[in-house]
Length: 326
Image (cartoon, rainbow, N blue to C red):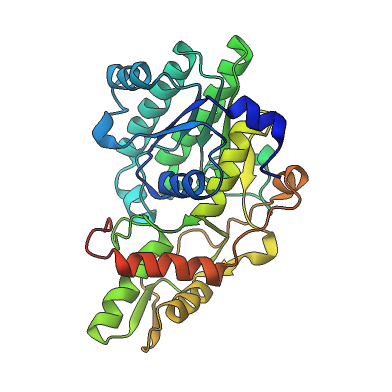
């Protein structure tokens, strides 16, 4: 389904600017467009050393330098549960600045399509499951990360406003928990899976048990960064709409943190015991998201099985431990 000839021709000669290009998803896109299908486009991956996206003039300079026809906007100030709780002001102010600047330059430079990354944390805390695209703004988000969540909600509102006022094609996608090579494996500030991966590595090296924060009971849908990358390339060139799409594996593939820790131990060939530290916060119990809209558009998309994708991720982390972000 990725080889629709009409769209291949439209993509050929395009210049795609990927903000946050050195992060988890940016590296996933780089892998996919290099090894699978780059659509005949020129791909430019920006990292923080190319400019501070919180500064409009620096964003403008990046756009002037590369003259993008398309943008995948991934850059954000991010962190796991504990960082979100500690830094609400920075999470809100800096993410809003980044998003405002990137969309302003997409408008100014006549970008044909911009696909921006949102997060499932935007959804209301008090809600029914599964989450659907229509529930996006249906009530306050979980208080633990409201700064980040409201900033991400605003990029959806701003994209729609640009579309209505100027006839642009700016859209957002909402992925569930992403993992893969090139993640941030920080134990303090990282997300649950890469943090666990780092803990597993250290516990294995020291011959200790693996301590998992919380009860291990919360449920999550995990999406492999290479799968997400394939869908983002499709959204940029083949999806003709601008409505928000949740990017999630099937609901029945939701796993508990404890189950994921078990799969990780298998991938790492970890010989020790799994122990749960129930004095640590769990965060939201579940955030089940529906992928019915995605499936209606891409019925045949095959997600990489989690054990396989975890093995790829573990092997990368082990091989690149010295230089990985942590």
